[in-house]
Length: 289
Image (cartoon, rainbow, N blue to C red):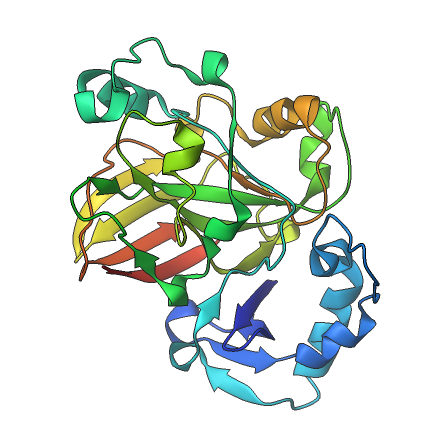
């Protein structure tokens, strides 16, 4: 099942082949979500209620709600309020190799591996959907694209063993982990506004039975820049969830960027990024200055 957020925070059920998909406006399904008073919960309430919400969304879509061509809507991040965004550095061997030989990438940190660097956090304020685009704020510095499989956590848990990890996944999305190259801390350089692009929708976990064998790619203005398969991850999705939950309690709506393959390269205002993950979807993202 594919659920999106679009336009002014509407909830959509996406139906049909991607090149001609229809978005059914099932915003009324949000009526089943619990209401809260301050202090608000530290999780995304939509993701926490996803099993019930799925049933309600399907029922509404069959009842003749308003619908739109996918091409006519502005896609937002399918997760509105993640408690945290977690990301994996250098998690593909070929990217690690290019990292070692490119001074703009390694910044004299030659021994970096995911095993000794572990994970890092990105500011939740950096989160956008594909329809909102990417802003290159510092034109005098190199800003790179990094296409990634994104995992959305579905249940609260900590210390999750890898053999149980996929039971805690709500769904998957396509991600762009944007970054400015430089010597500053990784979290600082990757947390600018618009630097965590997630979309085009959430594909529920039951539709992606094996996240460890998915093709992913990115092109810039029609030129292929990155292409690989999640088989090439150094730490696969269960291992990443196990690692993250060994240090953090994970909550519904937490977002996990799983790392990028080789081929990272700069973008400039006016570029168009097209990022794809097999069985998840394709999102088009415009770059502005």
